[in-house]
Image 1 (cartoon, rainbow, N blue to C red):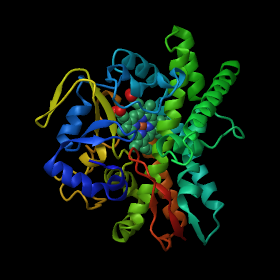
Image 2 (image 1 turned 90 degrees about the horizontal axis):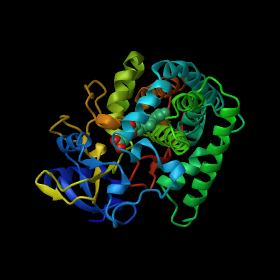
Image 3 (image 1 turned 90 degrees about the vertical axis):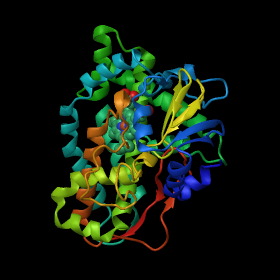
Length: 388
Ligand code: HEM
């Protein structure tokens, strides 16, 4: 089945059909290779916890998904690893990426959100992806990693080139990889020469003390944090604002009681989280899911977006209901690879929504349909035109 067009234009209809009729389905993946897609909540959650489903590409058979073809210096990251390497690195990162660090970022996130909104003036129209959803996470990730102001490149160009490649510019992905490699090499050298109170300096120190993070692992980690932390957050903020604007009754209730924003964020993440096609795994042995045996080495995509709309788990799943208990959704993963940045992601979306709703009581969708990026991997908007 050719999924690409359908998934971009009406993913939840496709997923409803697949859950009902073919919960483990043979598909053509984003790079044209054959793969399996898992869509039911129970199967997705079980797959994410199944140690037989590896993240390590060395378990992929010859024709399986090749990913972004990153050089080793960017590819030695948590999302390509199984225990025991994964356990070792995740523990080290956990020591540096602490709740205190996320707490410290809350003030700067709010300040950045306010500054971005200031620059829009009191009334007008804007593309909220370009003016708000994209620049906010750039600043947050740069603050987190310790990228000095004035040296903040356009992450959006790099990440778009990998996640939503432009068929007219096939060389863009390679250029982005070269640029990222250069950027992180320079940044690591600068932090080594002059450590500061930031995550990257801490990660270097953790490495240097026990000599436990290799140079490739350090670079790859910085890349992953940028990539996972930036790319997903842009999409999530954009998708969440769109969902609210398309559900005026829910939005009005939230405006009346902003203390409900944190719980609302959970439902918004369930409803329109960006992990669309989903999470990639390779079976180390033949694995049977929902009666279908997937041969070792083939690519398996487990879809949080499909699982989160499974009526067996979330009644009336296609209804945005900000008062529902959406905990248990899988939009941030599950198991040992559960999103490392989840507390930061939640804080960013909460603060982004709170600042936006406070500032613009008249916020509304502008004429014309918002457009979705042509990406099977991550659901997100190319633009979100609004008036305020
Ligand atoms: C805002 C939206 C975000 C979403 C929807 C999201 C989603 C996810 C998902 C689904 C996974 C699991 C992947 C897998 O099991 O293969 C994951 C892992 C990860 N995320 Fe996030 N993420 C977000 C934000 C962030 C942020 C802000 C950061 C860091 C600053 C971050 C860093 C990571 C890392 C390092 C991993 C790998 C963890 C591991 O393999 O142990 N993410 N994320």
